[in-house]
Image 1: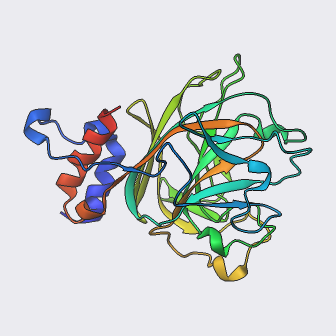
Image 2: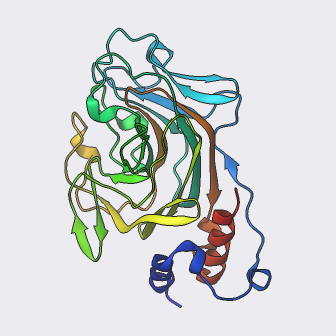
Image 3: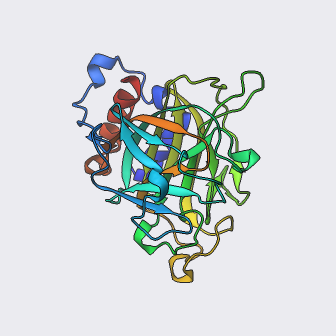
Length: 283
């Protein structure tokens, strides 16, 4: 079976890879890599707009009570100082699991759209190549949003700073598109999974269900500013990249940031399907 056909099968939904009994299809699931160790920010790189790489301005990113927290108590004004904390290693094929919750009040002068807004950036550029005033890494964003207690507001959406994707066999160029998720209100913990298979399929998954899917992530489009032109080669497929978490003006906690490496299984589509199914069924 060609890999592209195996990847196409994923579009049916992660929980529908096979009709065989689970016992018959179980294979050993790889242990997750704990990108966040619950103790410190070792192996993470901070980049905040208007500041140099490595400058954790106003202690924006911190570890307290076993959580990776994003806070703004040291800001007089947010002033579009968008921040990202990136794991210091690129990955290509994986399942990323992020457990998060929004808390507290938005930073002063945070923009309206950024209320209860954060993201997991996938296939991102090396943070060390970002210029001082660059707002977002060129990347694919799994947008994380919280509800207001009344209105519908999906999460695990897609935004594309400096990128495009293919959806329904057509190049998708708008900046954002909503998923088909339910709304998560209040300060509840939410677990978001992202299945990323190199430059092929990417799926956003909540509660075991695919809520958004696309393929052929690639550099292109706009919605990113003050970048080094050498880093933006439009049309180039994104086969791998850095994973980062956002600071967009609303406090957020991350309890879990773990990754299941799928690269060893990319040449065995059947095993790949089974392993992904097992990972998604785990909590």
